[in-house]
Structures are given as C-alpha cells and as structure tokens.
Length: 385
Image (cartoon, rainbow, N blue to C red; front, side):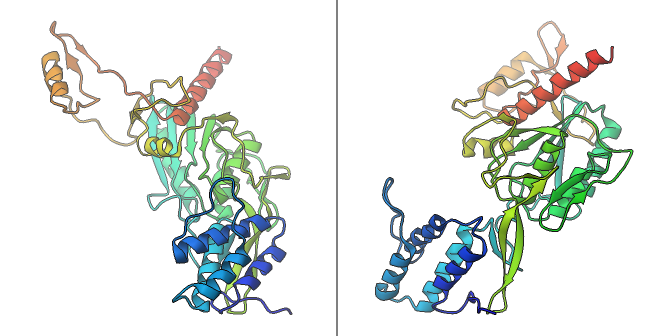
C-alpha cells in the first residue's frame, strides 16, 4: 500500500496536497489549493493578498520561497501552516477525524431548538444545531406549542445551522412524513421515513442562507423535494456531501467529501448550494442583526419590501398585569428616550383604552415566510367553505 502523508511530519505538505487532489477529484479543484499561498503569506509573513485582477498565488512558488528565505521559520512550522491552512480553507469538505470542525459548531451553543409564536397562529422553530436528539427536542416543543395555540403554519429557521449528522436530518424530516419514502443517501444507502399517523401536516416555510451547511442543507433539500415546504432566503452553502475516511501515516484519519448527497428520488444536492424557491437577499451584517432581533430597525434601505405586521408572543408564559398609561406620559417617555412596553395599553384624554401598535417584523426572510403562510391559511379557509 502506498504511504500517505502525516499531518505533523516536516516536508510532507506537498505530498498531502497531491494526496487530497488524487482522492477527491470530483470535489477539489487545483485553484482551491492555490488559495493556500495567500494563507501562508498572511499567516507567516503578514503579506497582503494579490490585488483584484491579478493572478492567484502559486502554492509551490510561495512555499519554496518561504522555505528558502523566511527568517526564523523551520520546515516543520511551514509544513504545519500549510497543512492547517489547507484544512481550514476546505473545512466543509475535508476534516481530521476526532477534531471538532468550525463548520460543525457554526449553529451555536444554545438550546437545540428555539421556539416562538407569531400572530398567535404561526409557530417559529429555530434549529440552533442539528445533532442527535434535536428531532426529539423539536417534537416536544411542537407538541407543547400546539397544546396552547391554534397553529396554521410553521416557520423552520435553518439559517446559520450546520453539522454533519445526517442521521439527525433524517429523524427531523421524518416528523413531517406519514408514508415510508426514501429521504437521503450520504454514502450509507438510502434512509427512509417511517409510516405513522401523527405526521405534521401544517404548511411549512423553511428559512435558509449561505450559512446553512452540511446536514442542515440535507434537511432543507429533503423537505423541499418531498414538497413539505418552500425554501426562502439565499443559496445554501453547498457543503452537503458523501464522505470517506482515509488513514494517514501519522495514525490520524482524514474525512474527505467524495460525492454530493442525494435526496428524495436521487436528486443530488449541488456543491453550488440549494437555490431557494423565494429569494430574499440582504447583506450578511443586516441578516445577522435580524437573526438576533427580528424587530430591529436597520437604519438603511434594503432590497426586500412588503414586510407585514406580526405579533410575537412567548409560547409558554403568562402575561404580567398591565399598567395603564396616558398620552402625556408616553410623550414624556419618548422625549426622554425611555423604552415603552409593547404590551402596555394606553389611555387617551377621553379615558378610552386602546392597544399600542403591533410591532413590525423587519427581518425580510421571516416576514416573507409569514406572508406565505397567511396566504395559504386564507386559501385553505375558502376551500373549507
């Protein structure tokens, strides 16, 4: 058997690059390896990357130049920088088995599922991480929410959700399918849904973005191709892949993407990402702001318009007693820059009590999802007459 490069051996970075190229030709392109030149320059010499329009760095040229001339850098240090830079650049498709990938933890460290309700009838489920047990957490949250609300639709938020646990994606998607159907093949054969009578049949809108990666992409692809719901947002990352592990001389193992994941009836999830049914494209900064607070007012124009008014309420809390406020007090608080409680009723000069304006969802993707679900609810209502 041909020897394979170890991650910690000096002088082996060139061999590792050749090894990766030979093992996953369908995924890696030579230009990707050239990006390592820029990484090495920044990492070891703090040089600026190539100017726009210039040819990209050539890895061999930069590596040999650094090896011959960089003061204070040993060949072992250069090798480590090269290998780690390569693994970082290709983190979605190449990983060291046993090391926690940055892509795998991108979904965050919060509870697996965050729950809210909009307009009292639309459940919102943010999947913070897709892992073993997430499907059970979702089902428990959904059951609790449905016991206290008349739900007409669900929003499933897979933005910033990652991970490589495709079994978790299968378990999650299975909650929405009542018949036995092939769902996904990530290199271990087709996994199917289970026949059941309690599958969720409500309309579903699925939020995705460029940070929807790996198993979360597979979940989005399953739900889309099985016609459970529509995708809203931007293209996913294109990082869902079948993988294979290879042993290195050092004793470590590399996990390499070798082919796209397949969903539904053999449809491949492209490495360019899954295209949404409804595109809502905003800047990464604004998207993250709205992800943290859907009501946040961003002080600059955005491309998407038509945001609707939606009321968000906690799913399992009781409201505190309300204090009455008059117009004079509201004016004073506004002048002093004090926040007013959205839930406080207001008493006008004639003694009439009225509710303050309902807060507006400014997150364009979420607003579009709620618009879609409301429209479907109206259609279903007319069909039932």
